[in-house]
Image (cartoon, rainbow, N blue to C red; front, side, top):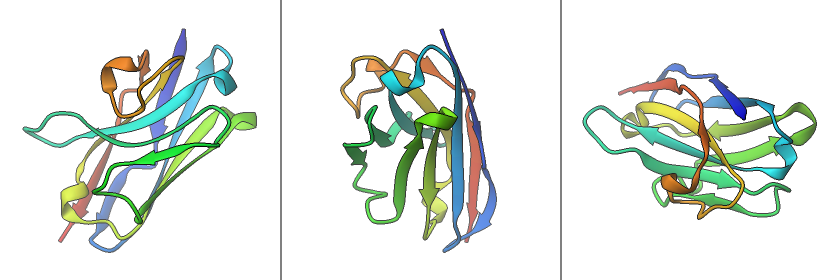
Length: 123
């Protein structure tokens, strides 16, 4: 069992930055892959970014590449998503999720999900 808690969301103007955190408790965090997804009102949940267990591999959706950066601190059981140059279309609830075996961009391969944190970008 893994419990995930996201934090760091909020309201920001376009062009601004936020850093999301995903804190995990439960089974050995360092053995898990971690992804970030988001869901905007009326839209399907979509992949944003992911990082493998040892930080060797990172993945980004084309829409956030060059603006977002994912990292993790296994000693703190935490994964971060640094979001820069935010746009109104980034507005969504952001979720982190963990997987033991994954296809990084595929939500169905993740086992545990957090409750999400709201990010709102005003124009």
